[in-house]
Amino acid sequence: SVVPDLAGRRVLISAGGTREPLDPVRFLGNRSSGKQGVALAQAAVARGATVTVVAANLEVAVPTSVTTVLVSSALEMHKAMALAAESAEVIIMAAAVADYRPKTVQLGKIKKEDVGDTLTLELVKNPDILAGLSAARRPGQLIIGFAAETETDADRLLALGRDKIIRKGCDYLVVNRVSQHEGFGTERNSVTVLDHHGVIVNEASGSKMSVANCILDLIG
Ligand code: C5P
Image (cartoon, rainbow, N blue to C red; front, side):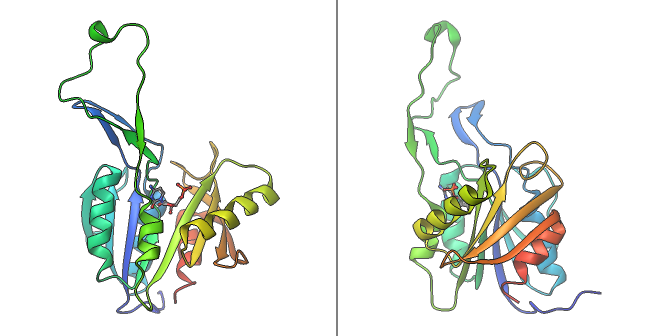
């Protein structure tokens, strides 16, 4: 059995990938399955935490003992996270949030007969949810972000992570490499966790459940 080292802790996790609507039937999306976020929720529940998941388009089920708030777009996630953050002690932004959304959402379906051979989409930047939560952090609130990168060079990957944690202002950053074999949509993950100085505090490679427990060890 698992030691309930997170008993009574209120943990908020964002999971999945946002979808940015283009018209009533289309969206811009990403390959996040939500597996790492849901593994974090499962592991946190097993360790005694009270868990809320803000879930965007998950491909996996959330345990019934978790309070789930369903969202789809980045703007919806932004709102839901701001509200849920008011009562959270630990916030983990595991979701893949679209950096940009279509500037306008067409009311009717975009039709090729009306558009012609090329279609140009204008995108606008989404709010950075993690940076916003970090800036608004209450005393004692712990905030953990993710950085999914395709960089294969270990030193350059670390440098990207160090720049990112400064930009985001969170307490820890979980840097993970995404490829066909690990990260988005797969069963496995390998991560390096940085603290706010950019110092490596933990490394884990394996199932998303084992990676989840390694991340939760930071808050135990
Ligand atoms: O900048 P990048 O998208 O790589 O940052 C990843 C981290 O920031 C993740 O924790 C993700 O959930 C979060 N994020 C966010 N809002 C955005 C983009 C990313 O909270 N608009």
